[in-house]
Image 1 (cartoon, helix red, strand yellow):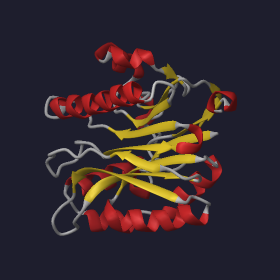
Image 2: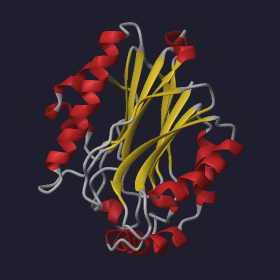
Image 3: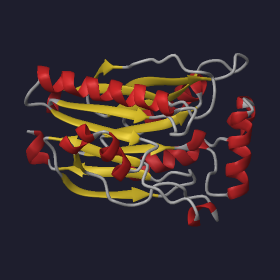
Length: 261
């Protein structure tokens, strides 16, 4: 089974430094209609097709409007069940929240979709959602955590503690279940396990490499591993990344099938 996670930067071009700066400036200014006009979901569709994952998550989805378009794209690629996590709000004119979309090709159920009281500002998190895949007794929690700075540190701690509490609950109720936590943690792995030692219970399934930023020039100054796939009761058969036009790489992992029986 292949699982994958991709911060698609609203479907915009994060490889170009001018475009990266322009899109983020528009987003911070809450000119979300302008961000939407610059998005091209054909590029996201291409990355999803190339990943060919059984379970895939896309973060930095620009509200319900873009999510519905993205769901149509994913349905055409064989995905059948969809689960949404809501992050910080967008402006009143545009409406909705920035979202995380988790899609599966096999039947799956939503089990965890926390909401937080967040300001409608960039950097406060893009949504968290957890699912159960009954055929494999597999739980997958997808995250897009806040950035970590003086303003947002408390919100980062609140959200990551919610995830850890949910994992504890799942393990207590389902001792033999397999659990994946993946997504954009906005935190390097070395810092994640130092700040939250509970993550040492997980095996790191994704590669040890920088996943952000892919923007020209910026990539030489800001190269961090922010996107991770972690697992309990699982091992990776193989793992890799794909590079599209986002400022993040798509991260994929092939899970050992014998551990999913």
